[in-house]
Image 1 (cartoon, helix red, strand yellow):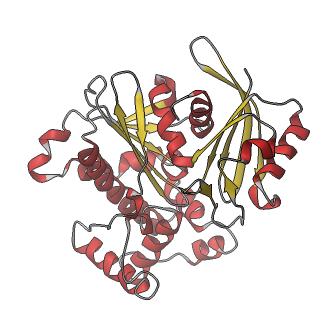
Image 2: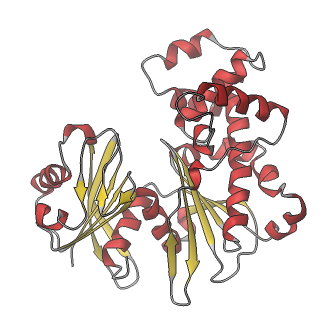
Image 3: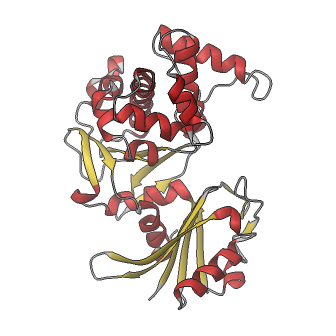
Length: 332
């Protein structure tokens, strides 16, 4: 059996071919394209097959959009994907469309020791619930529950829950963001407003404008015309700009608190998994930050989290792996 797998976001679309083996799925050739170059999902798939040749028996396509009443409309692309008819449109009999972060959740039970690094040691319980969080363009969160046979992914929009500041600095950050979004979101400040690429930039602007960090004019110049969050992460990793370092110290402290909250929500004594480009690219910054301290600081429930490990997913094709398992999963 040959599988078409995809991990499609608003910026990049990664497609590949995979085959199920006796013990694991083998991912083969992959291609990455600019999503905006294509006017529809079928156009993208046809281009891929023209590029690499061949066909597929099934497809699992993880797409950065919510699926509502059988339709998926990826933001910033102008596509409309009908889950019931897309198979006929791309010429593949069985197609499974799923949210991109759901694909990460489907991959979690199949990750090996080489696919993760430990951020916080613990003693995971067999078949206990798990949670996965990923900060990138937005903040994705999924929970995993074992039904006695396998893990099932529970989708969520937990990235949009209220940001809960933990100290005076975070309260001031929240107040500034509440004022910024007063007209568009009635002042609602979600976790995603802080834990995302845009959130990195918002934290940096806050620290500089409040006088807590001094802006380097060279940093401002570098951010012009580039992704500011990537510029700041490079500078923070190399410790070239104190404001960038302070930005990620605060970012990962907040990330740790939210990860601990999700561990409580899921009772994730099977472990918490960090995904997404910001975490994957900045392991050292996580380890130098107060991530673990914030994760553990849950008052009367701190002891509950004592055995919960936190893992950083380092496998870049984790979305494709999850999409492949979705294609094979009859219960998807």
